Length: 256
Image (cartoon, rainbow, N blue to C red; front, side, top):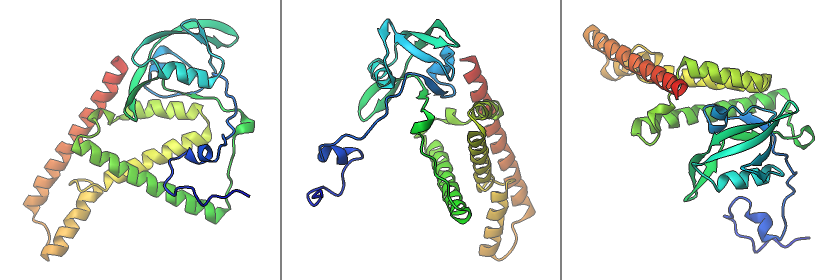
């Protein structure tokens, strides 16, 4: 029996095992690409799921840990990868991205590992419990969408993150290749995002009509036709502006 009375209650994630003198089991993962992040350095270099990374700049890559360590130490740099694809070796040139993590700059490729089936843990819930889990996930996705809208409005997140139909179609293709479950998740996220957008207090959207009803309740009389017409024009102008920005971001991404 372990005495845990001296452990601190506000421990950082992962610190529990260190404080107990233990290390969690981490299965050794080969440096095989499981997924490619859209619009990432890996996608621009042409990496594909199933590619095995044998070496980088002549340095052998034994496993996924070695890959992460090598790339993380080289932000914003060109590197040459030797990969195995369909039984044949080929070289790929990649320019790593840079990202700030906990006060330091690290390199990033934009790929995820292929996890062996025996190392995956799947949870299956009874019907009613699954409905509750789905509702909770819908709530979290809705709050995340609202938070992102707020950050875009305040300028803490770049407006370049707005995507239009071109990017949505591209992401749909990626999710479809990852399997039916990923594709359904993607459709759910798109539906939630559109629903949240539709409920924003912008005239011409459903949220704008709700805003008119609220004003009518407060004032005790309907909003005048002139005010509604002005609101409609403002709403149309805002929607057109959003569409132009989204299309511009999509086209700029394709060109780059």
